[in-house]
Length: 408
Image 1 (spheres, rainbow, N blue to C red):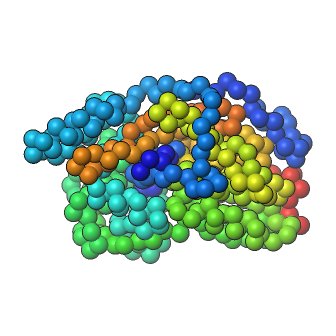
Image 2: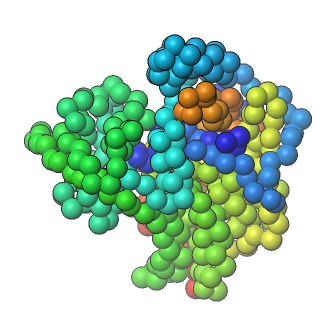
Image 3: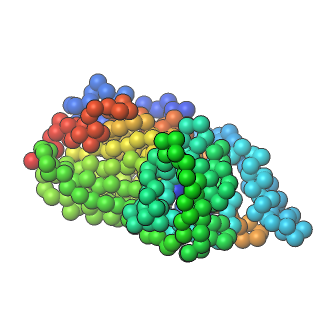
C-alpha cells in the first residue's frame, strides 16, 4: 500500500535545468547534432523489491502545485462513516475540490480489481481508452479475443457513452470505472456502450469477462538488415520487467533491439526499473518525491550495455513508460524515435480510508537521471517523426539501428 503509483489506466491516464547526462560513444557518433522525460489513476504501485528498493536521496524536492491534503481526505471519510454515509463519496468530493488532476478515490472492490489488473488479470470488456481532443474519449486498443473485439470495436472509435452516461468531459479514471462496473461489475454483467465511427453512431451491449493481459510480446524482424528483436511492452504489470530481461538475453547474436513502448499506459514503477536493468549496468533510473523526501530507483548491475537499442514512443507512452524512456535516453543507452510522449510525471501514493476505500493522492514528481520532470511536457524523441509521415516509425527506427552498427 505504501509504494509509488505510476500508471495511467489502459486507456484502459517544466523541464529540469540539469544538463543531459553524457551519451555513449555510439549515440554520439550518429546523433551529436540532434541530442540536446507515472502511477496515475486506475492502478496501483507497490514497494519495489529487494535490489530495486528505493533509497533516500538528498535532492531538493519540487512542490506539487495541486494536490489533496491527505489529512482532510481521511477526516472527511471518517466523519461521513460516523454519520452513516459513504466515506468514499466524501473523500471524492475533497479530492475533486482540490484540483488534484490525478488524485482519485476507489472502493475496496475497485482497489482489489486494479491490483488484479497489475497481476495481469481483470474483469472488463477488453477496451483500452484514451483522452481525445475536445475532451472526448476514444478507443486506444482492443484486446484480441475480448468481448470488445468480438463486437467489432476498433481502435479510434469514439466511446460516447456507457450505460447511458456520456463520457465527454469525464475523467478517464471515471470512464474506466464505468466500464468495469464499479461495485456491481462482475463476470457476465452487461454494459451498454455508445460508439461512434466516421459520423456513424450506434450502441452495443457487451458482457464483462475475466481477461488476462499479455504485456510483453517478442518477435524478430528479418526482412531486411539490420535484423532486430522487437520487444513490445503494453504496460508494466507484475513480471513485465523480468520478461523484458529474458527477451534481451535470448535475442540472437547480432540482432539489434527495438523496444516498442508506443501506447504503453504505465504500471508498476518497480517493473519499469527492472526493465531498465536489462539495458544498464546498474546506476540511476529515476528519483521521485515521497511526502517531502526523495527516493532513488537504481538498476541492477549486469545489463546488456552493448547491443544497439532504439526505443519507439508516441503520445500514448505514459507514466512508468516515460520513466523508463527518460532513463535510457539520459544515460545514453538508447536513441528514442517517434513523437512526444504523453507527459504524466506525477507520483501518487495510496492511503486506506476508514471505510476500506483507498485514496490515491499526488505527492510529487519523478525525475529522469539528468533531473528532468516530464509532467505536462513529455519526452521529446531524439528523432521526431511527423504525424502521417510517409516513412513508418519502425522503418525509421531500423535505419537508426543500422547507423548504430546493429544487425548482421
